[in-house]
Length: 319
Image (cartoon, rainbow, N blue to C red; front, side, top):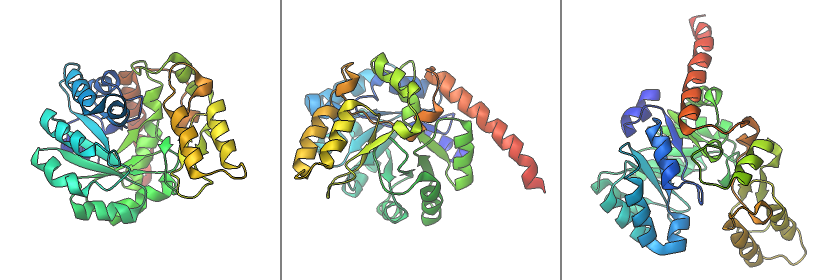
């Protein structure tokens, strides 16, 4: 199973760093790829701030930082998704991950450019549809993850997705160490996608106040906005005054989805060192993260721990 993902993407460790808004900069992406995993560049916030041209410039800068495989995340709901696809096809990458919409209309163009495509899926039904549309692999993301989430936990979701499709499955949501990678293999995945663990890495460009908050917070501090009002996508974030204010608004008589989005969007883009003003995605796996490490140390440690776990389990298979 490990070799499926490594051979497919040309990487040494079956570990993908999720494309995280405001977090997955060229520096972080390159560090993960240089360490043997697959870094994924997030385009959503860059396109919102500077348009497709900003994304193009950042991708070109990324290619000066690594000669290893890397990925690009494209949010399909973006009004410039088509332009982002054009740019990635022209600039090149190994993998495109997609979310927030159906990537099927873009698959022929992406495949013609030699790119592999991995939609992030919240259910086995959607995973099957993505396989039928031509996806090369799927990322099954459970609700433990940070950022926008579905309604099924990783432990239940991954084996269902693995049974629903024949293409490779990457497990996401709740992974930070080698025990998790070994568990993902047991559930039928061929690798894992990590987000929060790489947020607390030395190469991550987040202000230190956010990293220290992740190290200090527990799993229960990964709170959820958008779970009350109809028509909203739920979002799991680090516990901050701003995030708690958004949740409080949801429970206010007369609250509307439009009012929620205005409050949420303003706080979600506030990552300037003022932790109290920000809504920043963080998974429940924060409870497993206790120190800031380099991306190389993170990947090496995960692989070593996974081998130890699998070795400990080997005698069970011989019985």
